Amino acid sequence: MQSSYFKILFHSRILTILYGTPFSNKKIMRRFAISDIHGCAKTFKKLIRRINFSQEDVLYLLGDYLDRGPDGKGVIDHIFELQKNGFEVHCLRGNHEQYFLDAYYETESTYTIPQETLTSFEVENVKDVPKVYLDWMNRLPYFFDLEDYLLVHAGLNFKSDAPLEDEAAMIWIRHWYDDIDEEWLGNQIVVHGHTPYEKWEIKKNLHHLEDIPAINIDAGCVFESYGFGHLCALNLGTKQLIFEDCMDVVSYRVKDVSHPVPNQAAPNDEFILDANPETKILYFDIDGTFLDYDDVPKTAFLNGQLEASLKKANFDYLACVSGWVDIFADKVMKLDSLEQRKTAMYQLLEPMFPDKNWFIEKLILISDTDARCTYMDLKTDWFYVDNWADKFFTAAHGEKLFKKHKGDRVLLCDHQGDGSDILEWLNEKTIKYKN
Image 1 (cartoon, rainbow, N blue to C red):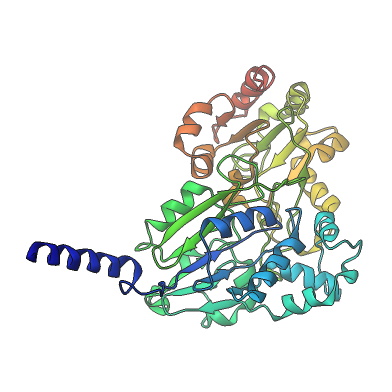
Image 2: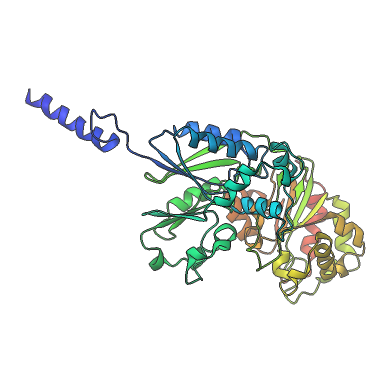
């Protein structure tokens, strides 16, 4: 009899730990965070079902509800429906909501609202979007300050004396982990999105919170590249990650989603590729690759030799990953159009490319230098040359994949050489190697 009593007591305590007071109908409140849904309404709804979201739980959404995916309006409508039905859902502002507001109120912006977003609202012009959605976006806050977490869309500017007053940084900033002020942060952890991370990187982040008290939960839902294509939910109580594969049809592929903070640099060229396995793309660095570190063209590339090899390989696109924002830092604000930026890049590389029109037609600019390999589409016929290829490719796609493709699709070139190694690689590998 005594043994049975202790068994019941033991199981009662286990139930208390897992579910709260035994034999009570009250559930423990769970808190979830999701970011960067980007118009993927079907995936969002599926993830909500998967976490078994209930009226006893709290959901924090960290911005970027629309653009890139097919149904931005559907995402917002589902949020409205959840709130109307008694679910506790709190929403932050992302840079894409700011884009939308800027376009509506005609503030200074070079961003064009994607057609898919307008189509989801059944309008042709942003001015015709029902005002209820604009009012909602206007009311969105920039951060949530919880006891144990700080929730923001992009991150915090710890170089500022008042990080929570820098609203632009909270929706735009990137590469801020090195500046984290742990004394200011205290016991809180920053949860954010904005910069797409591969699934393995997000998991790695979670296991190193003692070193870096921040976790990025943007799993690149709208990306079809290797390692991306997920919507991520973080259980703030248990620190459990839940990933849902994207099930929405993304009609175009975005290759550059990084936008510098306004007034610090001009917006990026966000470009679209109608890519397929036959699309042939060369991703290339400049300093140490096409030029030496004195910005002088490598001698083997002169007299049209580099251009001839590239034409022979028949590339559809030449994607510069060096980052035009960094290269032209002194005049970046004056390069207002894509044509101006491409022309400036051509002027830098002109001695190697006699055919200006061909080069500019093929050229694509990626400005996020530090995450250059993040935007590669490995489902295409891709190639990559860089004297830092080992560092950047491994960071984006892992050491195993780097070793597999080193010398074939990836060339770690000699930054001190005359470029002969690159010409040899182009002539031997990029012409013969096919998917």
